[in-house]
Image: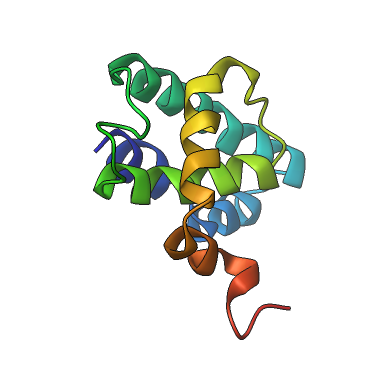
Length: 111
């Protein structure tokens, strides 16, 4: 829920567009998204047990929520060094075909 409720809703493109309409620059929008991702990732990482994936030895709904937000973090240049546990999970997930095939660039309409 940290990711699905606290990070994603305030970092989607509709919010970014609204911020721009309110007069914020692209740099402001990126800083907004980075701030909320960093806060959410910090809270999320603090909850994680020692396991291969977020909450166990197999991916779960938590990982399905995490990976797209990490994709956004990479996209917007968020410093992920403090989140080594999350990037380790990401690497494991991206070894699996279901996660690889779900990436935006793997979609048939990707540009």
